[in-house]
Image (cartoon, rainbow, N blue to C red):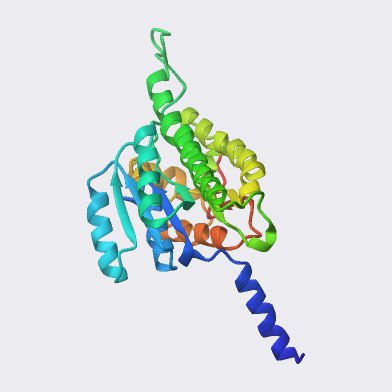
Length: 289
């Protein structure tokens, strides 16, 4: 075989090992804005068969219409509801499965933050104000529990389909069947004022590592990306002055990351089967204590 033919064969073999999006149905939560929106559109652009768009905002329907028009095909399927609701989650999977096939790609990007110090003290009276437990539980529900169960439902969707087709343990010759990408954060390493958010994101690391060992039985990979401060509504809610004074100076790029940059990294993680574990897309952010 000539060197040129050998190179072509190498490229062909490599392409064969990449996850073929054109045969896959995906679900992206938090898809009305930010990283979720950018990721959903990127997946569709790269040929995903169908993408279930999940968000509680009305804007999810408008986004689906505009995206489908831009793409020139009905790739996006909108679902409006609360990602923490188990019945809603199950209904999304059932409807997509019945109409388009099992969901095998999942990017649970819906997020919520309620930042403040764990303990505030009145310097005059000495009275302490503790972080409200209801806020803590809400952040954990949206940022930790919900992503895990959207991921688990994805694994179950693939497992059920394999069982119906009388396919047992996954064999590498089948190629990768699906992929889950959790949205972590640089805050998972700890960040002042984010006791609930940092806890949730750190928890996702444990979930990713566990599901990675379990889900591969069915041919589903699981990884996690840790974005730095990204230009989303959640980050912008911190206020321009805070971002300018406390975020940008600690970032090598001296700017917020664009959602499309994170989406591009997520698509890379999904399509390249050799990528596992954690990927940090932090723009060189290093917090100052």
